[in-house]
Image (cartoon, rainbow, N blue to C red; front, side, top):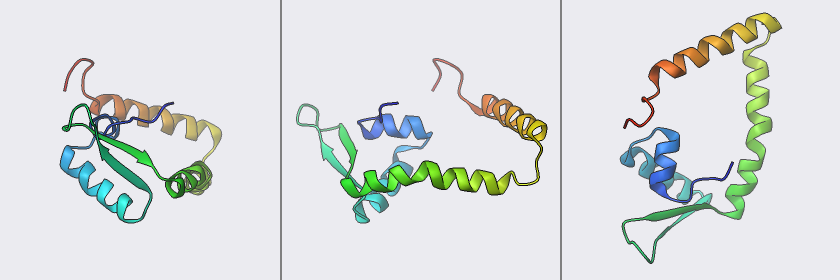
Amino acid sequence: LDPPGTAAALARMCHLDAGGLTRLLDRLEAKGLCQRERSQEDRRVVHVALTPEGQAVAAQLPALLGEVQDQLLQGFSAEEEAQLRDFLKRIYANVRPPEGGP
């Protein structure tokens, strides 16, 4: 999966409004994890990229999230876990905007 290259695409992917994304990017940029650059072709467009430090942190996320998931699902049977995942998918489908919608 290719990361989104613009702030607008990232906001859509993360289901954030422009203000929420700006605040998040401000914090990540202050920590040296990402950088923003205005497009030379269209000054309204902001390109976002991870810094090398941000890439190193991002590489650690799958393992960390796996550990959290294992902890949260501790004591669940495989059947219960599958049922929970099904319920969560259904909840997600209920809150997603309709295709072609906003």
